[in-house]
Length: 307
Image (cartoon, rainbow, N blue to C red):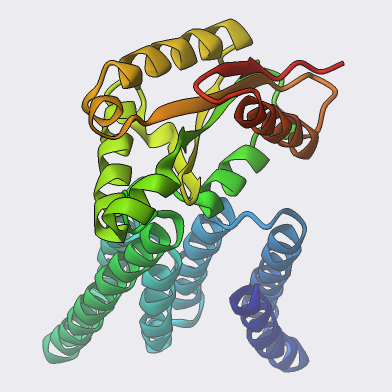
């Protein structure tokens, strides 16, 4: 948003100057570019989505640069340098590289009649600028990817965490497909920590995670949402699918090593989101059902039915 409004203001200033100087063609071009920057600002502000506006702004920036060179001559090539930085800042590295290689080729073609030494100088400076922008973009996107993983991944079990669960369930708010979920925790896990220490407790949590993941076709839909409490999302699946999955997990867990070694079992709750129910109500119903499972003697599966 900040970038698009800054772009609109700066280009708008140039548009005003050129129109005052009766440089109508390039002035009108700058007006169009400034209005587009303002449009991008409004779209991002209203939708909070940036992927398509970023691509559109990158394209309009290089198109504007090329049009400026065509209308005002080779001396306008200096606009290519902020353009390359903007393209690599806005887009994923691979997209930015493809767009800029095409744009740079067009720009150099437009400058083909320049003296050789000047053309080579421009080509080399564009190449060096592009290279450093590419390196910076690669490092920036790698760092952003690491930060996103760290923000949405549980450090101990290396599955998604509560923040990721909240984000992913919010996306189901307006879904018209059946959406189901399973909530469960480890019965008597506190005894493991009390008797054997937290190091053993951490190992048990990792083993429990791996045991459940082995039962899932989509392990990325398993979340640790706190302590020994986990969730499984079943997007696009109805209650029967989720309930059968919960039964399979429950049965396999009770036949596994953690049950034999530590007497651990699972308390589980299963529910399907109703078409007229908010995500908050749905998850609240699921949480209440898990509480009921714990109070009913544990080691069971409760159907979270909406009354």
